[in-house]
Image (cartoon, rainbow, N blue to C red; front, side, top):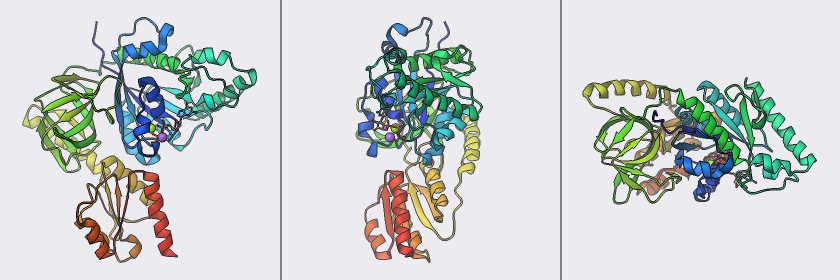
Length: 448
Ligand code: GTP
Ligand code: NA
Ligand code: MG
């Protein structure tokens, strides 16, 4: 039998509609409790073995399932993360679009849908939070149909009405959709599975539909290699005690081995290095919060792993990488990356604030947000806040532009003092809402 690569499943949807909670329920984890403000800031990854999915589905489990598991990608729902989510969308073979059934479609739901349509990604809709429908009686971890049967008629009708609303919204985007149990051909009709990420109701059927889609779409997809040169995307770069510089990555193609030479593309040009170590999170553990990694010699797509490699200090999240064997490989890679970066080059104003962020994705996102708010930007870069940033901000003519705005970055030693001396204000936050809020209200106050 042909070996199938683990399908990559992106979990998309509006902020707080329940993406992380849904994954927590499937993995039996509590990742959401470790997030600042309960808001997902970075893309995360979790490999869920097929046995675990089978356990959740119990006697509903079909025969002939050969995929080794699913690699789930959790994404931030805030609209400022368009760019990261796009990568999530493009990276993914399949998706779950999470919609709070009580709230219906929201701007980020629609944005996610456009991304799915653009990339022609097969997806299933999780109509979440059914436990919040007035009168709903919860039956923990039960299949939806079992739980639904036991509801009062008026409650049943309430849910039906909400499902019809979703069907209508999907139709606007050219998708025909229906409740999953009324669908004959899952390749033509988008399945809506009512679930509660909190009580677990409906999750067996959600996973069944997903596994069915994965099996059907991936069996015939010849692009899904597990052999050959590894290709991947960087989720996050960080220093780890006792390891040095590491990066969390998704490997979406091929096999990566310790000792492999890799080229990584980023804002500061292409970095060529070698893989010193590969660390795997335990099964069903989110790489963003995992503490017990296992050291392995090689890893096969798709996987979320931590790579130990020298010289990656300037690599930023969102960068792509691949295994290179020759100088020519490196050249080809460089050319492709250069074109990609040109697309996201940030054009800046002569007078304006200084923006520093942790990743290319958050940089792009915040630039968009600031522009929308009518705030000019003088300089926008990935990195910690240093003295040069303060000097640049201080050179502004208008006082309200003498700002350094930092998202998820540090202020280097001595910089606060420098800022005070120059009359420059530093705004720092790791929640995008409050950062923008604080900046705009401060500017409003100054104008009065
Ligand atoms: P972002 O990552 O910030 O975009 O949000 P998210 O989509 O990951 O949502 P999250 O999992 O953070 O959930 C948001 C809130 O909704 C939390 O308070 C959850 O406890 C709650 N929640 C999620 N799913 C359910 C559900 O099925 N029922 C109920 N009652 N609450 C839910
Ligand atoms: Na949230
Ligand atoms: Mg989340």
